[in-house]
Length: 470
Ligand SMILES: NC(=O)C1=CN([C@@H]2O[C@H](COP(=O)(O)OP(=O)(O)OC[C@H]3O[C@@H](n4cnc5c(N)ncnc54)[C@H](O)[C@@H]3O)[C@@H](O)[C@H]2O)[C@@H](O)CC1
Ligand SMILES: Nc1ncnc2c1ncn2[C@@H]1O[C@H](COP(=O)(O)OP(=O)(O)O)[C@@H](O)[C@H]1O
Ligand SMILES: [K+]
Image (cartoon, rainbow, N blue to C red; front, side, top):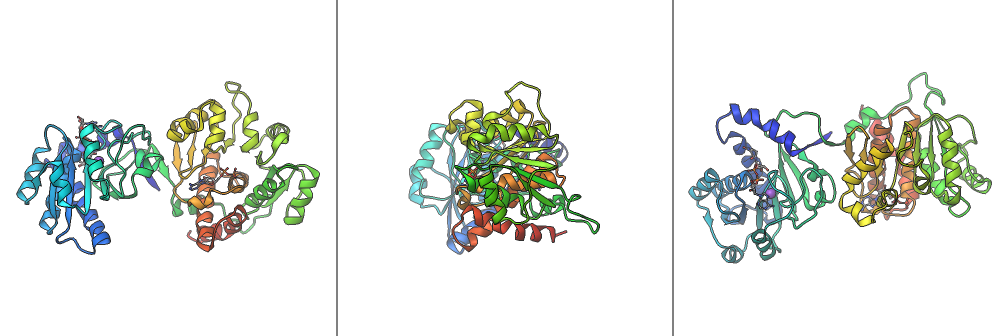
């Protein structure tokens, strides 16, 4: 599991170490890890470190201190280093180490003429508020062609919300200390981080604000049939999706549901669509009892009936697409076991705001919807979010932009419902579903361009590969 903590949590975890360890010990760990990462980055880009050039953009706080200490270490390995001071003062010990190692503080023009291979963004870290001051903006503009390594975080992002409301650094690599921050995992800030590398500085941390499943977590959560299993013990998943306008959505939702996780799949929908489903999937049966429903993908005007009928059963329901618009009104008594799977446009319609506002602040909006409907919200996107009404958040880091293809979401809806039917709770079902879907998309993209059918086609192989890990 990758874990991200808030600024307050990081500061609280740092304090006992700052109180008990020699002054500067924690910063030395951070600076050493940063210097190692920069050496690797220089080798990656230039094939060597000796004779390369690095410019530090140094702010007034400890983030600047990290960068200056790291630059001192780089100087001792033959890297030529310069620093541009952004702020009235520089971190005193960091500056002293930097100067002793042969570094020089220069003006912006000289830093540009120096021709750096990399810029180290030590402007602000977790102490920063969103946005950059004009001197930092000018420095980044003048050095715009040079790749940036962000120290702890790209300066200027909103650390705890993962938003980028104002000017900020766009890094090629972010070296973050102690734990991930919300901004290194959650979009749009995560997009400003480039690759992210975590340096352990020995913090003892509480439960995270945001977590990201990894293969071993998914392996632990995925159900496998026991020796005495029969189809009903594995769970039955029902699909109410598709319409005469969008029969394909039913096929794709069923394909996601029929990935081999649940013991049986039922389809309930218009006769003409049912015929197509049964022809394409001979293993699918008709109405009856289920342990979870997938509702709404491509359901068009049938959405309202499909949702009502699914909600009438006392089982978890995944609500997608057209059915989202027919959710019981906000404020009415919440129904347990709901998973909502909007993309940004659908979530925008739920909260009555422009799509762009949701895309600029996905975590905030997903939290709002989870609260209002007391439901698990799976907000689809490049970094899909899964938000529980109790405040827990997971972010999905698998996937590829090739997944942005019509019908991909329908496959996900069926898959999440099948995980619910097999007994996972809504939070795990949504986050495991997003992880598997992203992996299947990556595998499909490795074989060629991606359409929704090929994503579904890769699910069984991914599921077996993951379950084989335990
Ligand atoms: N406390 C420690 O010993 C450790 C600190 N660490 C580093 O210290 C950083 C936090 O240091 P600080 O608490 O000194 O804070 P920062 O260095 O993040 O920020 C310092 C100051 O920048 C100014 N500032 C705020 N927003 C700004 C903006 N948008 N533009 C320009 N200036 C702005 C403020 O006056 C703030 O006090 C972490 O991100 C990490 O890099 C690590 O070295 C681990 C150990
Ligand atoms: N840029 C992207 N990178 C990675 N995954 C993406 C990207 N854009 C969309 N996706 C994923 O593709 C799927 C698209 O689903 P959705 O928007 O519901 O499409 P549709 O309604 O056509 O099925 C979601 O799982 C989403 O997370
Ligand atoms: K920074």
